[in-house]
Length: 210
Image (cartoon, rainbow, N blue to C red; front, side, top):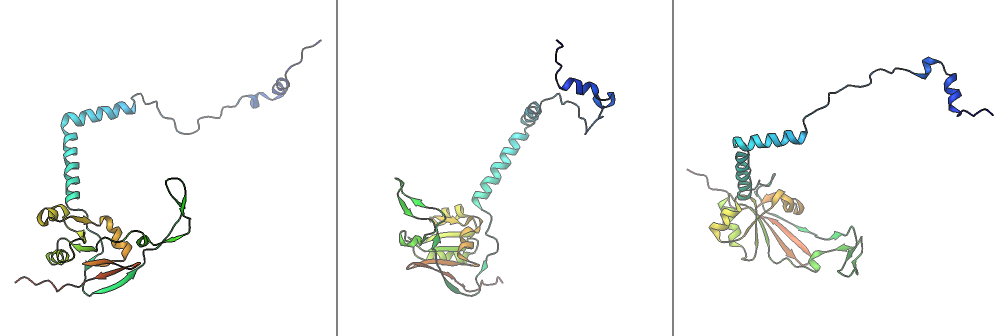
């Protein structure tokens, strides 16, 4: 009895030699093997920076920039000194995008519910937005109620806190100013029932220096 060859063998033998083996040549660029490990290069570079003092210099520069940014944050872009007074209402009501549940999983508010935060949390004091580099605006802010929150849109909060013995905040990135639609300062945000009343106050013009 003859042994049976696998089905693929007769088919392979029947193919022409030119079909059985073909040189497709080089496809794509060829790169030499990089012998030096990337981590070793990084380690060497860091060691060189440490030895030359460059690391210490960079750390000091980072520290200086951080302190400068804390002492004087970037001013809120686009705000001007108010030339005329104006007021408008602001409705803080929001529509919930997801369910709000309590600590035990109980449903407090379903998604889609309209909620006014002022129904549960009252504004403890007025919000005052002003330019900390403008003496007239600083004086205006300090004349307001003692429990008002002093929010800078420009200036040096730590320096003012030390000089005035009051807590100053900063509207980082202008998030609050943008939310309330404030375009000029000084401005005041005050609760009026279930609404907020926002006012931009025009102060007397600056006296020109002789």
